[in-house]
Length: 167
Image (tube, one colour):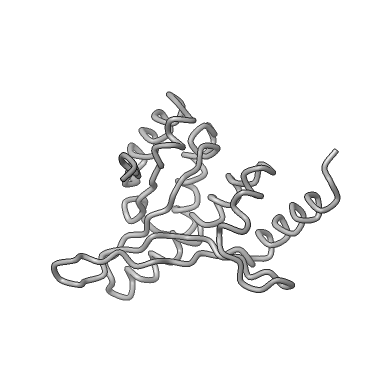
């Protein structure tokens, strides 16, 4: 049995996702040589009605523990597809990169859901870069590589976010 506080936090997050309180925020990706913005890294922000604007560090762990990471990724992917379409229609040929978690990489329905989200937004898959962190990919094993290949075949750009050795 979960403690009441965890159940309440889970309910809050589900409500926040359903009501659009959890939303896409972006960080610019800049080409050093020219200073031009070439794309954006998608991040999540939760505009919580009681606590204000929450950064991912305050709710991603909850989402992972409560099995809501996949729903969160799908929510952000749909928002990213809609946003990149608006930018492209406005003459900005940019990309949006979105991180995938271990639960996304092992979910056999994720590639089809990703395609559906892009189609529903009237965007294109190749305007999105779906990134798998090395830890997430290691945790997902062969299923993760299979998911990335299906996403690549569906037209998404796929990237491995490798941290490299510790400094």
